[in-house]
Length: 173
View 1 (cartoon, rainbow, N blue to C red):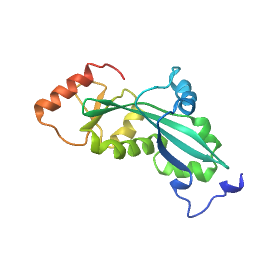
View 2 (tube, helix red, strand yellow):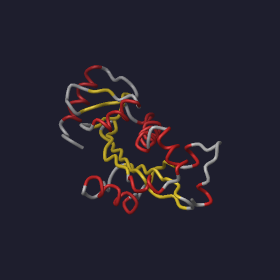
View 3 (cartoon, rainbow, N blue to C red):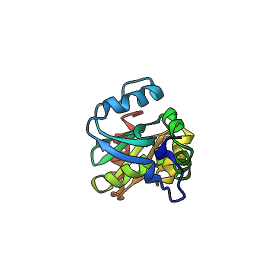
């Protein structure tokens, strides 16, 4: 155990995890994204990274992308590097586990960050594990089997239908 990994009874998640947005996340997001999807990390949009304290170092452990679409946001590319979690101390791992995981922290950060500038956030979700996290953040399923949304404001019914159609037309994102 590293000196800074000593479990403390007053330890909180912020002692172990830091979520932030980076303008240029490529070099940090690429290994996590490649490992999960076998593809390059998005070069566009808003890049959220979750850093985890491993001894003296803060390592990127999770990535999430937000992309503007009309007056809404699209969420995608969620991925976590389990190797980074495994490098954390037992106390750090327990704090992450007790807080619901790294993806939950990234989504909560993103939703707070973009709520005032978007009518809602859309996702394309077919994974039960991801859905369990997104449902905790207020996402709801739409008529499409994979399309989900978290409304920040309820637009008029006609505007809501038009926005949903435009997002559905994008296909998986």
